[in-house]
Length: 294
Image 1: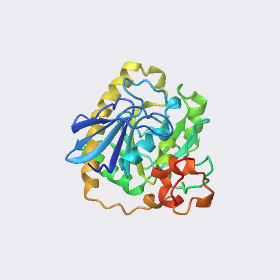
Image 2: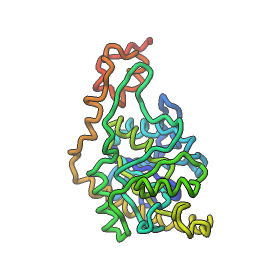
Image 3: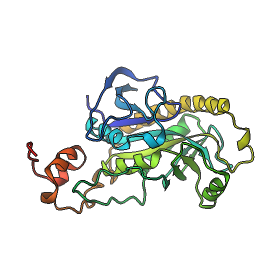
């Protein structure tokens, strides 16, 4: 079964209820284990692969996520388009809890996370001015509108380290920067997906206002969980609609050629071990056959 569409479920979205012909796929990667097994099956008749970002029972913090392994696993399954669902806090009055946002920009406020497949003898620099696949984002937005969600197209996602939430001063700073929502996971996924030549877009699910808002101190865990549950239901509808639309949509964006002009290292200079490790990601550019005894 050829799987070209992947789904990453965030907080509150640990499964796809409408997925049929289910099968768990355990994938070993050179970077260690992904967050868990990939759940493959049919969504509205279309083959997809689903991964719960934080693992079974939500046991992996944002800082502990093995982003490289997660994206590498999708790539080895044949995934070309990747939809991410993520819980976020809102930095804008008009983006209220239970709204959806389809961000088109990111600001990185993480520390020390690995967000590249380059290294170990191969150097490259991808273009990342527009970090989200515009076509995939449009498909997600249209599916949200069809599902009846209150959805905002475009916006800047601040990716913070966590696991603690922002201070009030930080929250006001991000608003002054013009940011719209804040979360803890998507920046690394977007960068690695781009290097893997996978289209990537985020469906950001607003659970509450960030610390800047005067009502923030009245937010309870019960309220957030209730919003997560409601968001998960609408997210599944949106994702199913997007998957249905993607089946008939040819892949004409530039995401599939992101590495074509990015790699600086001469192919013959790449160590065999690195060439072998990165074969699923950039083998078509590195060329040659690695020495199996290396």
